[in-house]
Length: 110
Image (tube, rainbow, N blue to C red; front, side, top):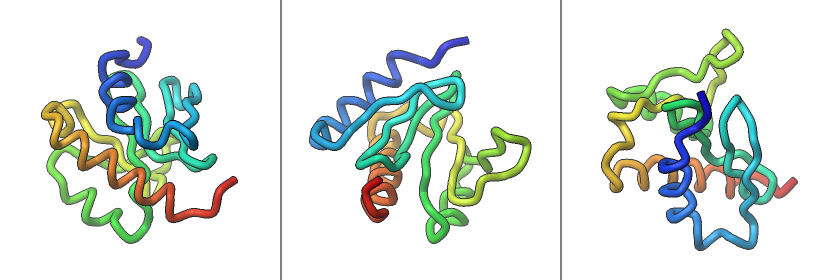
């Protein structure tokens, strides 16, 4: 199953201000959004993937629709999967994307 193109477009609209430093890459069997070479967020099948970083990880996991990103079989600390119920509303999606953007921009450019 390919990624949800409607969700990808919603994310693109939230990231329009970052066009100069935004790159889309196929990753994790879906689509990733990279800022200055650092992963911010993406999607795989129906799930949103957000790199929140280690400081916001516990807070992100406390959200009822978020869970550990265990794509490789081992949890990736600082990364979460968000199920569709957690990003269905535009405002909720914007909050998740902003967390990924904030973390990606806190890292040195690659």
